[in-house]
Amino acid sequence: MTREVNSEVEQHISQPEGYQEQSYPTSAENEKIRHDAFQHKECQRIYHKLISHAGGMDVVRKGRRLIAKKIATTCFLNSTEPDYEEFKQGVLIANENIKIKRDESY
Figure: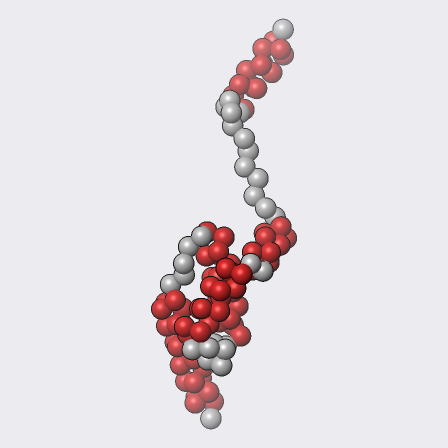
């Protein structure tokens, strides 16, 4: 009798009615979601607009292109527009830092 009562009480305490445990995607699933999202035309448009606003492929280095890809994918998934000017400033600062390091090494 005590066991039955205890198990009944535990059931009511452990999960409120209508409660569903939320499961988050694993990193592999998340990577696939982001990869599939990047294939959409709208996501590609955001990516190319970020790159062109910052000065084009010649100005934006590889590391910043990866950042642009992440920004475009996130904005596409969240249905928002990125801050193009902020990305451009980041590219300019990164390029300036590279020039300074290059000058120091000579």
